[in-house]
Image 1 (cartoon, rainbow, N blue to C red):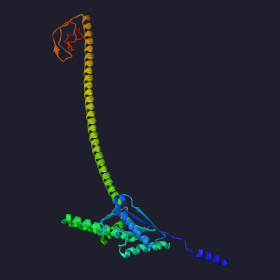
Image 2: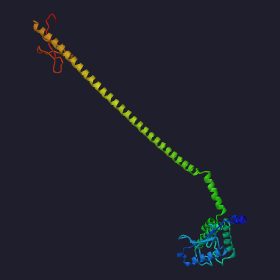
Image 3: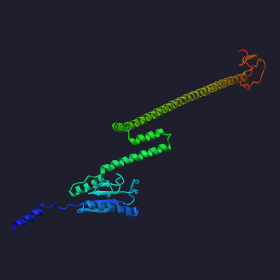
Image 4: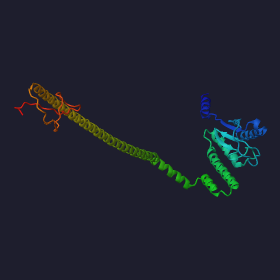
Amino acid sequence: MSASLSSSKSLFKNKQPKIEATVHIRYCRPEEAGPFFKQKAADAENLLKLWYPKNVRVIRDWYPRNTKTSEIIPGDDVPGPFDIFVSDKIVHCKTTLKHGFLNRSTPSERQEFVKKAIGAALQGETPEGLEIQIREAMAKADGEREAKELEAERSMNSTNSERYAAKKEEADGTKEQKAAQSEEAREKEADPLQEKGAAEAADREAEEADITDEAKRKAEAEAKSKAEAEAGDKAKVDAEREAEAKVDAEAKDTADAEAKSETKAEAKVAAEAKAEEDAQANAEVEASSKAADVVEPAKPTKTAGGFFSCCSSSPDTGADEEGAVQPTIQVTDAATS
């Protein structure tokens, strides 16, 4: 009894846990590709179940709508993806790697690759995928596509050889071009402010030129203003001098006129004084004459004007209209004569 129990425990301990492998077959949507892809997916599933009847779960699904399809593969005659994944590792690719559909007529090395991947998954290992080969194939396809585009462009415009060479060089990615790009990148990184410094220097030169021009214009304006001011001052001085000369001349004329007027006035006063003296003398003479007893004949007498007269005149003597003394007759007594 105890021996049988220990044997059962030993069998239970040595029993390995069950591991399943999940395989995805992905292809175009049935409504877009028709029943053809659906049948091809069923053929691939039958082949997988033939290899591993147990512990393999096959899921058939399709890519989303508008998935980019590649060109028609010779022998398949139908465009569109048909890929097989084992534990999320792609192991079969119809379009990019040109594997076509997976079935019994597929080349043996291709079948062995997929079979080996499923076996590794059942052992709990990570299967070998085709991701690197797919990336390389896509890069190669891109290069071939670009080469075809360049070839088409060259055939359309064969005379433009320089343009074709530039395109081909760009597609090939020559070492010289990469080196030039690297050198240019290093120069930009080494001196990122060079261009900015040149622009700032140009701005400073332009600003200095503007300042110089402005200073020159300002100096010219100041010189012009100073010249105008000096010319205005000179004209003002000349006008002041002319006005002073005019005032001096007017003052001199006024002084001369006043002097002449004073001279005339003095002469008139002297003449009036003289006439008054003569009149007084004549009056005295007339008084003396009336008092005399004998009247003698008249004798020539010298007048104030320096002339002699022998005529008799009336006792009333005086100045004429101009103030001159008229001739008079002097009567004296015998003793006096």
